[in-house]
Length: 425
Ligand code: GDP
Ligand code: IMO
Ligand code: MG
Image (cartoon, rainbow, N blue to C red; front, side, top):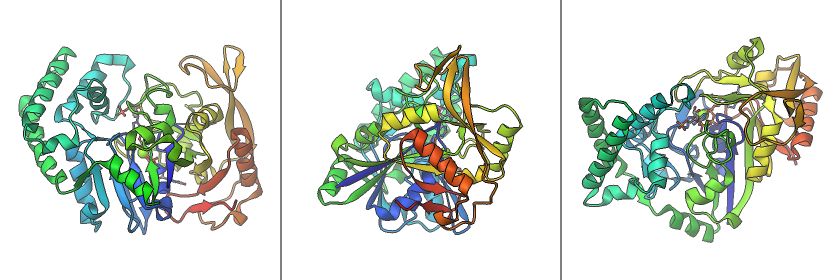
């Protein structure tokens, strides 16, 4: 009867995919609860690299059931692409993956609407992944969405036509045009992909999950994006359209809050962000470039350059509070292995007012107040246990644990599954 949640504490791309894969053997079920193909979760093992967008990161271990939950938005075409590639690499996906009938569908017009919305915002554009995420969640909340289960209904085509007409009206109202030939091609591929989707078990996932809990099965919920992209608590309006926080696991899977056990909060030893929006500790200098180069900070989905900066403990403390994080997981510390000194933002100076509390808005002139710590100047990528940690690295961990008032229980020192140190308690 155990549900643990693993989620990002920054602006996404913290390394969630890698750690979900590492933790999966501890669980019976792995479930995605929100987001869609805006996510790009990277896993590396045995010399291979995989990027998952809609499919949970538990599919490579053996025996676990993976679930795409009701809180996810699914693009059938991208799902089929992702699934077929995995099947080609030897994963028997239909045997390990189940999909919630209540997950909402991203329509072919969803991407067009996403692009039209961005263009209409001009300079204020969010820099979305362009996958139709915002329009699909908007349809869900405005009670106009189509769900995976609807594809089984006899009048699905008519429902689709109505949704399509509505979308086209909105696209035109936003000042964009619809290429009807291209749309017709996209629709053909979309309906083909729906047929492919029917090769998977479409389930009432809330019943499946609660039944599993009653049988004492354990569940790991995999978050997408990160807390600073949460639609309620992130850097609004430069956020995604779902609740990326721990509460999202309850609504996105039908799990009661009282069932939640451990909350794993995952963060990089520095910080990155893709797309527009405020980022108080962003570095525009050589150091930022060095972090980007050493950390290969380019988007897993869009290939966009990720903006890089120092770790922000003000934002992290806020994220820990909102999520009720019980354990921290620090990623990519190896990227800082060669640094003489490392900075951590411990407070914000807002027009001379210094605060450690995350403010209403981080838009505007925020000067990060930094503490500088000595670097460990050691290649950490090959070490096998905590006993090999250099003293300066131990001091860095102790500093973070003290400022964040939460234990760091896992440290990741490279992209491979094996490059993971689980700390002794
Ligand atoms: P996610 O969206 O949170 O799953 O993260 P992404 O996969 O988008 O981005 C994380 C990137 O960092 C991927 O390219 C991973 O292979 C890589 N990565 C994960 N952990 C580490 C680590 O500890 N060190 C290094 N150098 N790379 C890592
Ligand atoms: P993972 O799960 C990083 C960002 C986009 C944009 C904003 C809104 O791999 O950590 P959207 O397409 O969701 O409407 O875009 O959110 N974004 C992400 N940034 N990692 C992600 O996912 C992201 N998913 C969305 O860049 O700024
Ligand atoms: Mg990612």
